[in-house]
Image (cartoon, rainbow, N blue to C red; front, side):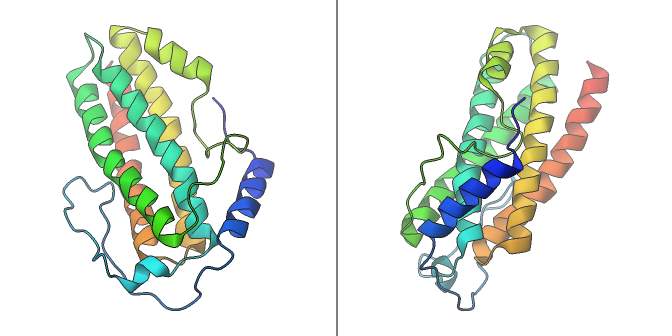
Length: 203
């Protein structure tokens, strides 16, 4: 499994900080974002002043988390297309997809609002826990119980990477909405890791 190195992270951060160099340093009003709490329906106001208040860490968080979430959705789609998958694993995959796609949309909206766009991340990696091509090929080729087990093992690693990235945002970010989403990711994905670890003992 390919995990972002410190050097890669530093390079990505330097690029993102350049893109966000004109970020506001003023105060912010907290807004509510749809996080990994699957029951949340609150959305921030389009006119929220928090949307304009951001720093390089906020841009880094969104730019790194978007492709990270996109891969989680892809992994969920792979497992949902298979036959003979444990019903609890199917439910988990559905929940992950339902939670992370709206977050992708929201983070893309932030980058547009902030005027940074999506940085070129091709040579920078996309954050800790990302699956490599071999990992995805293995998941696509697996069947039944083997596929269920592999999905859980890979997603635990994937979630651990997302939690690390989200904690960086909580510690260093400025945008209230982004920090709230990061906290939701930490809370919900920590809980999902516990569920997946338990499911692994049952397969």
